[in-house]
Image (cartoon, rainbow, N blue to C red; front, side, top):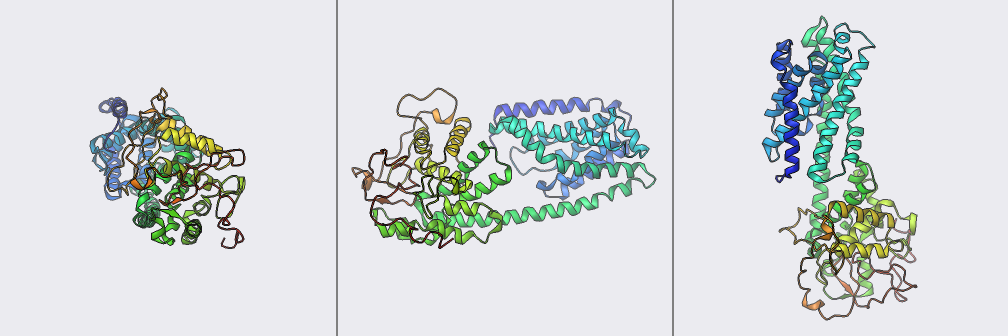
Length: 508
């Protein structure tokens, strides 16, 4: 991210000044400088030799410095390595400064806690188990400082709620940092023993094995991402009308999941579910996906098989987890009139209910061949109107809160050109006061295609095609029916049997 908000830059400057204050007493500190230089060189070498995203296993070097040295000397150890290591992201200088200042403060805090509790004497005298208590508190301080600083920069740069970020980061970081703390304590004790620094550095060998395993995990994860990217690109090529739709649905699903307080693992699964929800369109004839005119009942039944096609395509991909059920059931409705199996209420998996709302939201706020994009506010109002019958009210409210707080600014890497800004007025009247994207003045939508102008009302779906039947006004016999939620066709009246009738459960 090249454009760093001014408030985030100011935050980095403040953190850097705090780190400088921690280092000011360094010249007057009585410390074994050969130990300081050796540990700083080891940390810098590890940073240079290892890929930049796998730096976590080298925390033992920093924590060993916190256990061996006075606070100012310990705080100097990460400085050369953090300043010299490339981040691979712009602005490079700002990111290096941030990382160096963050580690200086964290190591200084850990060393200060350890020093005040008499941990240095316990390490020198190998006084166990007493040495474990100051070490544990020092590790906690190290983790807490990293968490607070990271949470602050995320809250300022990405407008994420700071309290939730802090709690999440601390919960995820404490266990790994505690393991590194044990390794750092082993290094410190061996360093002060008769075996000396060489034996202490041997502790890094198991950490290198950990780094290798971590690297293998990330390589596998990169392969997963490449697989998903290939599938999404194939869908975008086949159905050009909805290019970028899958990525936007993934981003909206993440917004909902985070608003609901789901853990990072489930958030990632829902991102996959949103991105791949329409992968089954690869099994639908291209002529149907690109058809400009009305769909016949038989053609609609063919298109409505795409959730089952998608489920069959991804059922063997284990890392997708519950995303597979979201792909299969994202067109189900709470009132049981959806497809492919007509599930009702809680029978529909939670992840599918999230993707259903995200899918409809993006479809309504995107310009299609058969109609103009709706303003974000109008789309949210339509989702709220259909909540309880078509959509899960909890998911709708979560999306509404997330958009109010963060705005809706999807970034789609699949687009050849940046998408036009989505109009964000809540209604046709004056915008509501507030700083959020929903309240911005609506942009003029592009003109609808000639084929769609002057045509009678139609229901629409995400495939870029329209049905020929007019959309009746909602009434008591059609609760929550939405002729404007394009990705979720409204229930059909008497006529051809809905897809899946007589065969529900046969293709599970």
